Length: 448
Ligand code: ADP
Image 1: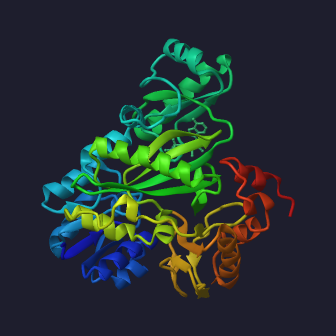
Image 2: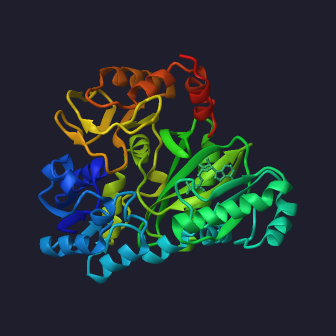
Image 3: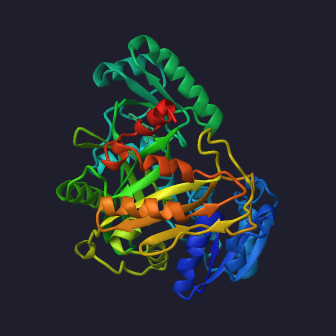
């Protein structure tokens, strides 16, 4: 097993990885920017290296500085967390070229899934249902019109290199196609340096349901069920739960085995998430994330499986410690993303935390590096913690969530805690009756 792992990330996920390492007897190296010198992951790690100034480009995205930190500390593996360099194929290649393990898939798989056109073709060939649309990329209006004849309107023009909802345009009718095509191409070129786009049928009110898989290097692939991430604002997830309020055990096992079989065919290794839109009892693939997800704890809570531990083990060449038939789904878990943001305007709210009190008690988990006196830096993502609760039923989990949110105290900065408290009063949410547009509509129309 690895002796020392360098954690190429910050915040709650750096802490999450550190915790798994310590429980496995593995030493940890934290890297940090100047702004993060007092962060919890830096305090708890066995060693730490400052890799650059505040801006992410010069620190957490600075490959030469990170590799130097690995060499100075003699780390034998790198865990990239999520975001930053976690889906950068070149980084994975460079780590391996320096004789260290990259705790994630091969660079080739990161590349294939990083381009949504090749990703869609690859998974479709392996038997996963995809959103109807163009067969590959579309460069001209003429080609787009041809595809639109088969797919119908409304349709979406999407960037092959897309991420964070950018390079996506809706064409509601034929006369809007030209404009949508040009706008998506221009935005994709500006944001990603790659203007390639493709077309997809626009689904009007789907849920976002994703399947977690984990694969070892011995040909074993296991699915760990789904997460429902339909509560979104600007295509960003806000609250996630598992299992989905709308899937039956039969549907779970059907889509899970389609995905696991496909992933085995592709020869993928490590943890991964296959994201779907789900409408009228049908699944449509949209993308695959080749890394740990922010919302992985809800899966851990209902399966009892430590995903980071399993990631480390498969990167070490070990076999998965469980088979599909060993996975039992137990109860219901909900995660709230606590952001340092104004709960109404969503404006970032960095600054010094005055009082901090973490909720506790049975089946209540807080993944966060926050402490009283900590200053939330303004340079990075506003996620400061994740509150995860588990209950025997969804109703039980909702009651526990209300109790836990009530105990939690963070003063000195604004947080999204009040948003979750209000959501708990909404019947649609209580009934699990929502799709990817529900939260935005609710935010627009709330009267209080
Ligand atoms: P990105 O990588 O930019 O986040 P995704 O393909 O993952 O792009 O899509 C992000 C979100 O955009 C989805 O969760 C969904 O809300 C919406 N979306 C994407 N494709 C479609 C589609 N074909 N129909 C309707 N909504 C879509």
